[in-house]
Length: 637
Image (cartoon, rainbow, N blue to C red; front, side, top):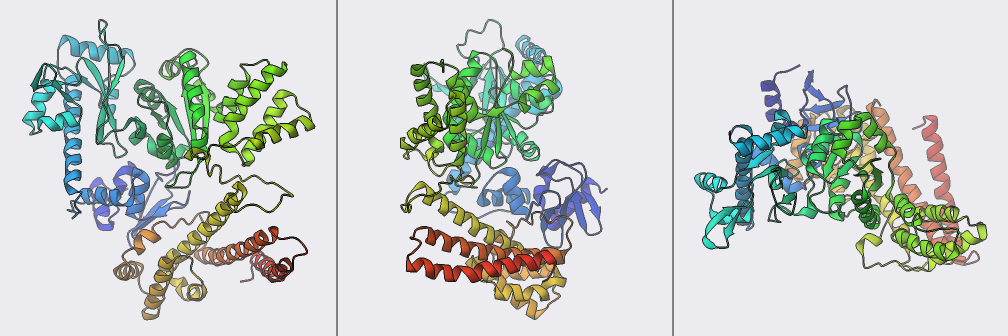
């Protein structure tokens, strides 16, 4: 093991400063550093940082990249923001454009809210007064003692202009306090500020980097007549309720490692579940779950469990979530991932915090294990309101159920649930066919973004149909499949370039593959050309020097190569990885060409001369693909 001081030196030496967020000890093995992977749950370190290449790689899950990739993934930010975060850590001053003034204002508000968080927390932890004591007593009654308060930076707002005076002493201006929504102009005296929050327990709301951006405030005094038990900050430059989730900064790593996120509706519920071992829990902020929330969660997982109270309010909240069906299954533009939403209902009127305290973590895990898909929940809730043995009631139930499935039209998922409906209705085969025909006649509302391009991974199969219009849903599915195939080839080519750099002893063997490949990306073509020039100059050029000269010629190369994901190669010899990549690229391109011809043939009649001409082109491609697979399987290179 190495000391914290040595770890700091490693970060500085390799520029892997983002490893601060891993919160785990690094082990030094020769000239490499190892740790438990922050992207999946493990006990034995398989996450390697190579100081020579300036890259990391996990042999357990296949995650790889450089410091920018690491920061983008762990902090859930885009590349420019990752650069800013790393520059701040490394004390590097960035020169930016005309938005500097606006960004400076943001930084001031972030600093103000950080100071306000510290002030509220100090009031709770150190100040002695009757109300402060009652605040501490209330938190203890909810199993949130001193350690919990410290971990979550919980505070107390005393009011009486105390925060305003404190912030003024720190140099913050009145308008900044108003803009951060910690103070407001006194309606009776426009020249005076008053505290936005007073006599409330304060829960800081943080962004993905853990910086306070808003507050949730809860009443606790028995005689408090406030109409709202909870009060959130108003929306500001930093804070949008629909775009933020409570505890996402603390939960994101666990969400990745656990493979799913738990969404609840309260601060105390979130904290209680984290204490019980469910650190992948987040909460909405006074709103129902939104499509914006799903976009955030989709960057960390494809599975979300909505955990609701078992009372009537919980049922209503679950019913509102049904509106998310289209949004959940529509891959986000940023990462092309869809989200599978599940619903878990507590078996009593207790909220999650009360339930886990009374029944324990094992019982809660059972509830989560029994979660059902949101679509299934929506259908069951709808059908449960009607007497399905009565034709009139069954007809109304069918109409409502089809509206739930409408965003899924033209997907295999919709077909599966139509079979489920037919079974619930007790339909025979003929009646089920008629049900499907009625559903096919419904028209989705394509003006809603949630209703288009859903479920790209499960296109509906419609055999024996006429030629498809260019803009038909089936055509859209074909476009999606083609894009997925192209993306796969681009990813494989990126891995090949990365391997060429990292494995010096394979460069001669891989040269022919780089020379003979028809690159899908112009950027990859340029990288390949530079790498071949460097190889001709010095075939044994060290990895770090190779990277240095490459990035000097092509500054954008680092960002491109950092997206490399050498998946499923854990434990393989480098030569085996090389063989596999060369084979996979050729196989994918042949399959792509075959699929394209088959799509064209499907639009033609069997006796069309053009169909026959395409068939002549198809045969040698199919033979080449079959030989390629046979030779690779037998070990013939």
